[in-house]
Length: 143
Image (cartoon, rainbow, N blue to C red):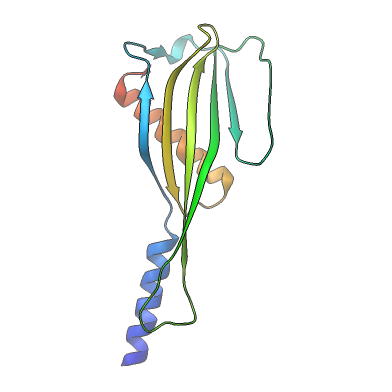
């Protein structure tokens, strides 16, 4: 009976800590600024997740979106009765900035926190989707 309870607890802990989620820690937008998606021709997306600098001069782009890894928080979860396995939760903080190249200024900025992503590609997709939904909700982007 005791073995079943410990096994169940381990499985529930793994399921609970293996799920990926993205939430906003904070955001900012240019007051009274709305970007119409229909009027955009090209948008440059730079995801700066590794220790490298990317500098590009973009011709013909209306805007640019940058994503930068700000922090990685690792937390070990202690499960009573289980001294050999400590699942680790990783939370990645990503700063996303949206620039108007034509106006030469930042029009939106936000920090997201993603827990246990399934790789950089999936995290970028989740953050991009969350940023877009937030910008639409705030009125920064019109469809």
